[in-house]
Length: 318
Ligand code: RIB
Ligand code: CA
Image 1 (cartoon, rainbow, N blue to C red):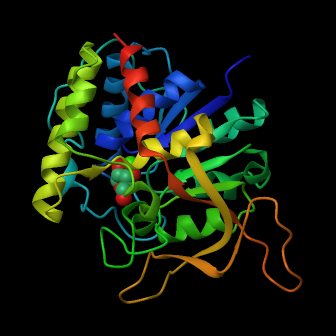
Image 2 (image 1 turned 180 degrees about the vertical axis):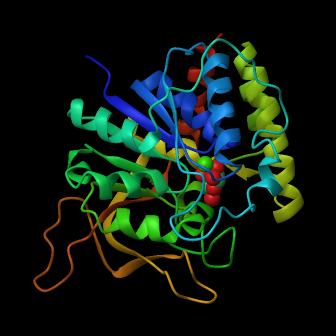
C-alpha cells in the first residue's frame, strides 16, 4: 500500500523535530516548508535541513516560507523555550542538502495541486497556508486533510487565552479556519495529554541510534526549559500529535466542532474559540439551523501509543 503523500509546514522547534521524524516514516514526504515562529525563518529553515540530514532523508526538499505574520512582526516568545537557535540543546549535522529556490507558498500550491490526495501537517503559525489559500482559491479543498497543531479548547500557553501558533498569526489562523479546508485541530487541550518527562526521554534515548541520542538531548533541553517556566517536570509533545492524527487515528477520540479565532480581544487575541454548545460525534447530522462544524477536533489521545510511534521512528533512523 503506497504511503499517503504529505507536506509538513513547520518552525523547528524541538517538538517539530519529532513531528518531521514521524512524518518521514509514515508518509511519502513530498517536502518540508518552513515558517518563522519558534525562531526566525532563516534559523528554522537551517534547522529543518539539519533534521532531515540527521534522520537520513537529505533528499526531501525544504522550501523557506514567511518571515512573520500577515499583520505585525514575528514575536520572539519562542526563544524562552527553544533558545535563540530554535533548537538549543544539541548540534545537528550539516550535510549537502540546501533550501530549494521555490518559496513555501508556491511549493505548497504547486505540490498539492499536482498531487491529489496530499495531506498537509502544520506545526507552526499558519502564515504560509493562509497566503497559499489566498493565492490559489482551489487549494483549501484540494488538501486531503490539514492536521494543525495549534489553538486550544481550554487555556493558552503564550497568553492565558491563546496558544503560540494561533497567537503568532491570528489572521492566518482565521483565514485557514474559514477556508473550508478539512481541518483536524490538535490543541493544547489534547497535546497536554502527551507530555514527556525524564523517564520517557530516557526511553527514547535507549533506542540506541544516533538520531535517538540527539532527539533525547533536544527533548531534555526542551523539557528543562519548559519546567523553568511552568514548574512541571514533563513537557507536552505538541507537534507529533498533528502527525499522529493521520498516521494512527486509532489513538484518538475525535468530534466535530465550530472553531473561530479571536482577532480583536485585548486579553484574548489569537484565542481559538471552540463552540462547545454544539459538538457532534463524527458522522452525526448537523441540527437544523446550527452552523456546520468547520473542524475535526482531536479531544483525546492515547499517549503511550504516540510514544511507541516515536520509538519506532527513532529505531528506523541512522
Ligand atoms: O504551542 C505549541 C506550538 O508552539 C508548537 O508547535 C511549538 O513548536 C511552538 O511552535
Ligand atoms: Ca512548532
